[in-house]
Length: 285
Image 1 (cartoon, rainbow, N blue to C red):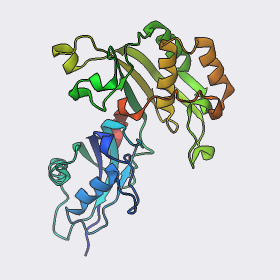
Image 2 (spheres, helix red, strand yellow):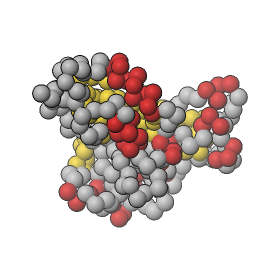
Image 3 (tube, one colour):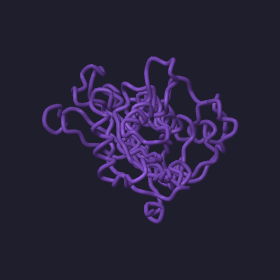
């Protein structure tokens, strides 16, 4: 008699520069997604069921994560107990070598638990760097991990005022990029947190002292396609004096993705998914 499967929630992190995004890429695509590597690692544990990992939060090409999450089921041969959480973490990390992907936590959860739909919030941080003439002057420790804005001085107070305008519940149609599922997704989102604050960097402290880092934090239950990068680009435009507070309000009010200024969205390299939260009760099987 075959043993029933065990469902796990895993938290994992990755540097997204070399991947097509977190989602699984089709076999004909030359660059794979993080999910491809996760499922390959699960397959090496030799489960009786196919290795299928359900990702909670989509990130695109070049975007990173300090804490994304997913659920998976593992059916073992009769007589073999379920993996403990720590054994699952260690085994998956062993099989993920040498990829810049790491499992950080694992929980046994109920069989009907869903990583995407049970998430209560997601937090993204976008990292900016000022004080360099050209992106090639960034220290190697920051390569592909922030948006280098040159010698631009940012008006942080104006950016905070603009961020407060975006905070709360709004129709964010202007701030979403069009995708195949865009017409079916509700553009009304509630931003629990929009924060602009100085950031930290190891290289800045010890060598590149002219660099200034900034962190833009966004927290919501869910986001629209490329919403964070578009909001970041708009806040940076405000900070540079290229977009006024009233113009940002007009963009929000017009609710039209085509009204978003061209070439304003932030590049993917500075974006990190830093947290996916769940109710504590969901983390107990």
